[in-house]
Image 1 (tube, rainbow, N blue to C red):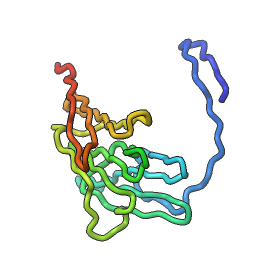
Image 2: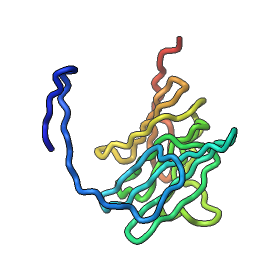
Image 3: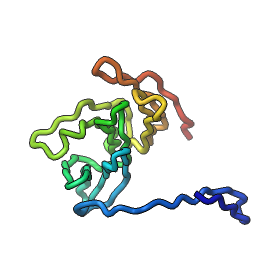
Image 4: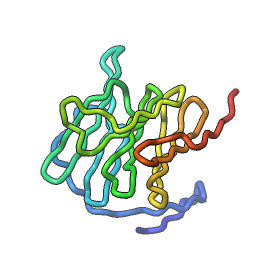
Length: 166
């Protein structure tokens, strides 16, 4: 990448140039977030508004095709989870975090691996650091950040950071 300096703000930004590959298929909804795995598998979190109705979905793009599933709420972020990245977490505007296996997307009667429901408002962001793939961090409009740990087939909230309330 190329390092550029912006005079007006004094901020240094690294401009990254990559090749662009067209994803197979199409998405007919607002894309809220993307997660990309090293094998070029892409997960797109989407939301749609129809009058007063709000829903979302997730679409997985892989070599040779795509699979989708409907969500009963809007989505805000998506990240791969675990060392093998065979699952992903999806943050939702209903305050939940849904963890899905890649293989369950597009299946009739799919069920989440985990439903994390400790936030009291829209979950706005997720992070799963590569150096700690069994840890998930979440942020929410409820003024909290939560750290989650995947252990022994389950997930538990191991820490809650409280924010400022006006």
